[in-house]
Each structure stands twice: as structure tokens, then as C-alpha cells.
Image (cartoon, rainbow, N blue to C red; front, side):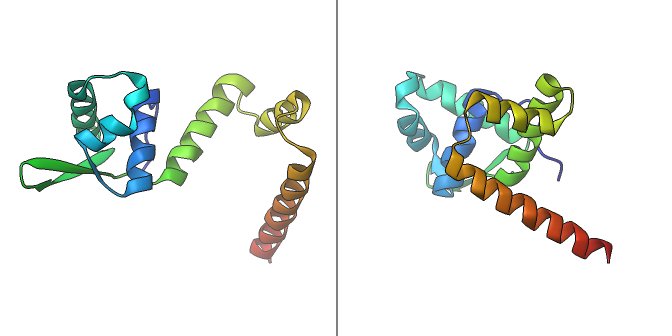
Length: 130
């Protein structure tokens, strides 16, 4: 499945709740998003629209629907990062990394993790070419 494009902030917040909990009722999603001050009907409408887009699915339990995410979080991340790189960095992922480094958004100890990840990616790539 190709991942979703152009997820809104509320859609992403709902997906995060469903990824974390596995499944949840409209009321439970509403409680988890209570700081947003949205009506329960707004959450119900958004979940219905997300189901139409095949982002979520539901099953019935008694008189309530329990929703679950139908999209993989890694696929969503990949698409959102790809969209960000396209829109803000002309499709150049290195420009994004350079921006994060210059802006100080990556701590020095995180650089060691980044170096290890690069080394692993290089090793995997070399193994794939043999």
C-alpha cells in the first residue's frame, strides 16, 4: 500500500493514538485529544472521513465502533519526510540534514548515532552490491 499524502495535524494525532493503543473508541480518542477542545462529533466525523480514505477501519463492539489504524507508521513517516524534503529542500535530503546540523537540532551525542547509522547504511549497501 502506498502511504497517505497530505495528512492534517488532527489526522496524524488520531493515528498516533491508534498506533499507541491498537484500537480506540471515538470517546477514547476524544479524551486523548481533550487539550484541543474539539467536540466529540468533530472526532467522530474525522474518523469517518479517515475511514473513507482507508487510513483507519472499525469494528463494532456493542453500540460503539472501535477504530484501528490501517496505515503503517513507518510509511507515514517516510511520506511526510519525503514531502518535507520536496517542499522545503528541493528534494535534497542532505540539505535537510545540513539544516538540522546548522540549526543545532541535532545534539553532539546524537551525531555518534548518526555516524553509526550512516556506517550501517554503507555496509548494507555494499553487501547488496556484491
